[in-house]
Length: 403
Image (cartoon, rainbow, N blue to C red):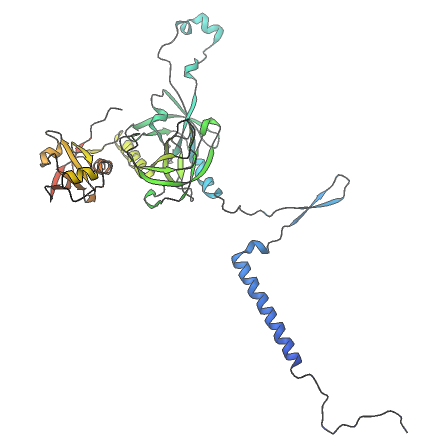
């Protein structure tokens, strides 16, 4: 007889199992995997740098043992403008000028003296680093400021790649403080022109030049204001204001956007010490392009002129004359026999529009008239005794103004 005890079970019954146990575990596992994959997708999309692991570089120690050191991955710096600077910097040049002495000492002409001292250049003829320039054409045309090359007898251009070349003046425009010079070099880097009309206050910009002769330098800032005028720097003013540092030697250099495209030619700063205080001014490249084209085509800048004197409409003048507007320019005088006089314009008229473009003030009026082609007829809309009328004026050529 067997002493083991057997439990009697009804036929057809199965061992008891925990109901739904495995199924529940499988569902929990599937949900955990789904959540993990979702988190991985979000992090890889929004913060991919979190998933990158710094590689370990093995260096051999002095005793021959391997010393593990941490090496950062080669990634672009966050918020870097290296691409913009890299595109623009090769096309910015250093300009060196000299003015020959007008009075040469008699000893310098003596053969005996020259035999011992040689043909040394007098101190006032030494090359001096005065400014910067921007290559805007593969033909060697360079934009810079007029005050950089004004009165220079010798001009030398230093390129970013180390080359040096003699330059000649193609033409100057003192009224905008722009000049065009040219070098006879091949394979020149050329800067792409941007669109200053699309620029807005707050845009990031880079100023590139050679301040104080220390070498090519890039500074960062934003556009502080647009359309600055009435600064009494030039006759025609439409400056881009920036807080990017512009110092002595930056004149004629480039103001570029974050794509490395040229927005303006750095021209002046507001300073009581000679150093940058965060208020710099650049001539828009749209103005510079017009000057460049005119100088290359005519040898000088040709501007429109109608022979008027004007003044801005102030609230006091508007109230005094009972004017119903605060924009436009009051005609204070008309040159006798000039284009405006022949068209019937009179003192006291208010110039409202030039060639279909509205006039906001005197500065804008001068710029609009200057853009007209001499010899063509332009419609000028005026307000006379609160009645508007249009005068067709045959545009004349603007006389060269004294500096």
